[in-house]
Amino acid sequence: MPSFSFRAKLLLAMMLVVAGGGVTTLLITQRHVRHTFERAYQLQFRRQVDFFSSLQESRLEATREQCLRLAQSEAVVKALSAAEPDVAALYNLANAEFGETGGPGRGGPRGPGSAPGGRRSRVSFHRFVNAEGSPLLPQEGQGGRRFSAALRARIESQAQFFTAAITSSATQQIAYLAAELETNELGSVRFSGLRSRPSNQAGSPGERGPIFQEVIVTKVLAADGVRPLGALILGLPMPDLVPQPPSEDRGAPATNVSSGIRAGMLYRGHLYANPSVIPDVMADQLADAVQANLARTSNSPAEFNWKFAGELQRVFYQCMNPGSVFPPAHQVCVLSMADAERERFQIRLKIAGTSLGVFIGAMIFSLVLSRGLAAPVQRLTAGAHEVAKGNLEVRLPVRSTDEIGRLTMAFNEMTEGLALKEKYRTVLNLVADEKVAHQLIHGEIALGGELREISVLFCDIRGFTAHTQNMPPAEVIEMLNEHMTALTAVVKPHHGVLDKFVGDLLMAVFGAPVHHANDAANAARCALALLAAREELNRTSRHQLAVGIGVATGTVVAGCMGSAERMNYTVLGERVNLASRLCSIAGPGEVLVDEATLAKLGTRAQAEPKGAVELKGFKTPVSVFRLRSVQEF
Image: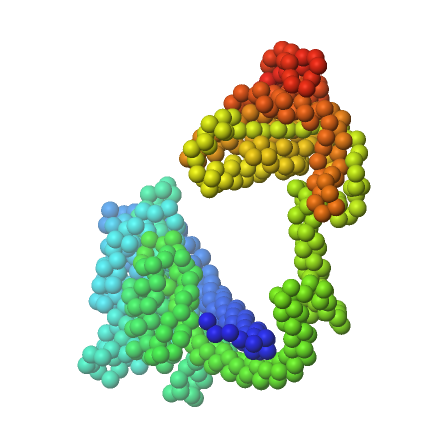
């Protein structure tokens, strides 16, 4: 891996920070712009939907009420209740209520509903069906005009839906029809409602494609109010979903100048829309896209992104007759995202340009800053080289309070610590334990001796001579090093001080030079832990050894003893000799303690008395106890 200088690393870090900031800003800004546009689109979609909903409500409210009055009238119920329904009476009643109408698109009288602006809604047709959903056709001279063959086919194709509507619990339902208009029915009538694209089939110049109809289906019940007799079907032409251009500019493309939203109605896989708003190719592909989304999710309303001719579009749709037994019709709105994409692209360019300028400025600033930082870094490097040579007295001047200043202070503290550790190492050549060395360095231990009440522990290998008599010296040393390493790791956690190693014997002191509460308990627990450590070591070591341990408690002389060139911190006294004698008579895996130690442990210790034992150097027998366990204090 290549090695970089401090200045190069600083420059690289600054560039990464600037680049990261620029990328982060770009992402956040893009996300904000996208969310802003999405909120604006949702608001526009909602306004469009609300506009159409209010338009639909205003058109249908009065008409639905009048359909309901007519369907519940005694005359209609009587005409439909007869064994042979009185078709002439039905259509005379309907003509009187709504005016005489022909097939869809004919210029009959307007119905009772009112469109926005005070214009009354045009009724395309009104028909009756019996309880089986079959249309009741008026004869010539019986009221009503000829029933359009195309309209009749449309109604008959949905007979099962009319039957379901008649047998459902709802009194009224909204349905939609796309009724084919015949050329001879059009005459000079200009239909201003929603229509599909012009037919590609040959025909007369005035021929047009399917007209989209909104239908109110009102159930007619018998006098008992339960048994269905049939239904009244009233058709209204569907208005355009987007504003039309002024009459003098009808040849220009129609767009919603307030929002740019194009709209149409999806019904049975066909998108019905003004062809000047949604062209042929776009309508076909949009219908496929909405149907695919409907197959994935049943949510309504819903929206998704869609691409047409390489341009991103946002599509919104909602069902216009939810809960109806008739085929669903969906209002579809589509809005181009091209402006949003262009704006996001412009924002990306601006942010990229700004980031580039900041990047260049940061590079210049970093070059200047790196010069000011190079000098203290070079001094730190030179100081580190001095420390590597063994010069622990080196100190660097602290000239600032920033990170470099704190780093220099840390360097000085490090060299002081290294110098202190060197002193520790020198003292540790004279003493056996680092705690003793620490107190000697800080003057906490006076040269000579002092009386201390302590506990002393001796640990010896049983049968060491017999075990090692034929063993090579190197192997003996290896075995002892392994043994003493494992046991030393046990002594220190119990606040013990390793006094010395004598061959296979370990001596530890508890209570000097530092006194701890319950030193006797620490010594007793350490003795049991030494047995456990040796047993654990026997599971993995090729040398199977057993130890015996003796512990005694009492007053001894503790201090530094030896010569001016070589000193040793140790303890002397009758209690030390007693611990040594107890260790010598302890069997493999035994911990023997004296009466004073057991008294310190109190009821927390479990011990087995071994009686009074005569020991070398003691005039009277000594009470000895075999320690079993010690509870935590």
